[in-house]
Length: 418
Ligand SMILES: Nc1ncnc2c1ncn2[C@@H]1O[C@H](COP(=O)(O)OP(=O)(O)O)[C@@H](O)[C@H]1O
Ligand SMILES: [Mg+2]
Image (cartoon, rainbow, N blue to C red; front, side):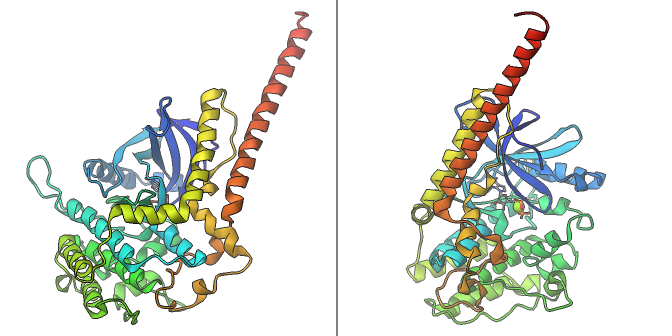
């Protein structure tokens, strides 16, 4: 990970947002203020992957293609660049929370995210997939861009309720042989049997992955589990979908039939397209009077995460102001003021029983796909801690300035200026 803040090409990286299977994720800005208008996310490819020329070539091709996908439900890729042999992608910054974090928080904080909201999120993701699957090139050719990595960490929820899918096609560039083992494992949970077997893929592979998301959102727990001695990739290859347990949802049989059809092991038995699956879910929501608007989801997120959103904004604003003011001093990282850190303190003392119980209570919150130990911070401490960190940064800056001035005075005195 880089020491922040730092320059990378024309970007100033100032916050480490996270690390995924293939990249470190930073928040960066281009140019000067006003801040906010020019924030971008930089995904810097992990050095371990850069040794593969084939990987770099594929990533460039995929990123070029992804940058042409302009849609409200797709995180826009601004481009792929290279600096000192390091490849990085610049993309739209979505201020919010990813679905994996949200599922974890719901479980840890015992928040009840209504099933209608969960299915609304899914429908928005299916809009993104439908657009990409049907994407037509300038010369009229249907390119059929397949995502290949539809998974909760690639579903971003903006605090205003917008839902966006990121990392289009990037997975195809990932040479699994060089990727860290746990990355393959994590992603394998959402793979269709044909993808897990390494076969040629069609758009129905993404339909299956959306089906896994649906299964997990409806059941509130992970769909695939590996028994001792087997890997998730082996489980995905078999494609045996566990039975959906009754949850007392409206018209449950209708809903479960949709989910099961999306998860058919043979692609030809699934919904033929993301559009068809979205229509089925939309009809179900309409028929059961559960239609959700983006603004309503936004209001729910605001209600539950407003404090964290403000703490996040305040701490970033302080860093940006410090950057504007003067010489780059090493600023304390502020990444753990993101909402995902919130669940941690709340649960470190006492792991949430809901997170451990399986299957969860009807209408209980969604189980975290991650270990509960990954969430261990307290919301009330959050703002305080980020404030303390910023104060520390200011004190550090003051000390550095003091030492530099002192050294200059000593030198001047030595050369007889005084
Ligand atoms: N454009 C973005 N805006 C905001 N957060 C992002 C963006 N892209 C990625 N992230 C955050 O960084 C995390 C890690 O990203 P990524 O490298 O894609 O990991 P993964 O391989 O787990 O999907 C995401 O889960 C998300 O929380
Ligand atoms: Mg991702």
